[in-house]
Length: 483
Image (tube, rainbow, N blue to C red):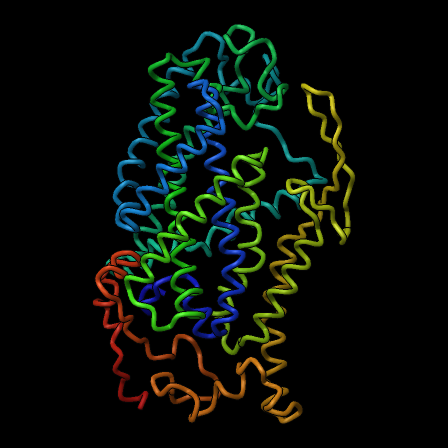
């Protein structure tokens, strides 16, 4: 994708499946970005409310306004440069708090409390056999659902070369493992503490339904005040780093793939930049509103990858690696995946299921402080992964079916209303730069790449201006065998 000179993740979809399909795929991508931004803004609000003792809604709004403001002003450059500082703050702030929390007299040895009951139940936990498929489903969701994100591809596509983009990706994977260690340790510390010896109180956080706020609670009650503020700085930096990237990525997809491609092909660079700025504010406001209205950071974290995994991931596999898929298959895959996923319900959104997959059970959730009991349907069947696979197979199956029906003459060419099969292979209609030797089965990789015509202002907003200058992958001139 980097070598082809794409500006956003949706570019290959619109190139192969058309502008309307690209608009449909923008919806789950946008929801993923807004869910993610809302999750991290909600986490910051909870942290600030615990450590600084200010109103949680006020802290969410202030944090969102700061991130929106510098993203509006600087675009991708401000996001990239602030991320360098924020990454350093995260690493330093989290690691510096771990030794102080571990050395607190109220904390037991975490290696012992991993398997033995001291003050609370062991923190290591176990997976019961009935839930193994549920865990496997969520594991795949969080792993594979983290790939097709514009927030990731905006860094890949703005790298100075394709090789550099690959190196950065592998380094980031290693960095994620390193950065996760202090969070795991802080969670283990929270489960190994006699909270009766602290200013928090006699009940453990999980008995107050505050497990998702264990990080700020540990910083506040087990660390000295100046250390807790270092930790607060780490959380704030992490949230700003993620929120600005997500908001920018959503607005860049809208400006490039929706506004310009679908409505205003002749839009100037200045106009595109201002559309981006307006949508940065709109999407930032939407994420802030969701952060204020929702009650579960953990739930939003799962939901941010959900539709991306079920809908966009199989579409990305198809558009890049499966030869012969077309718009009809893409629509079918989108529909199958969406119906099967929504049919399973979603407890976090209070959405009841209308498809009861094998192994479903009714669970009850007890709110410890109020005593209220809440009942919900839990699908133990890995229906999210099944929905993803169904979407992939539907895309491939319907693509080949429609191709066979139209090319064999069983369906008249006039019924190709999406122009996905017949007109795609017509020399009169097809742009000459996409004509190649094998005209019956045109693959994305075979299409002659075209240099993106970017002005200075829009180029600085969307992508690195050097994106199209290397590897010889951007030349609009076809090779001799593509004559």
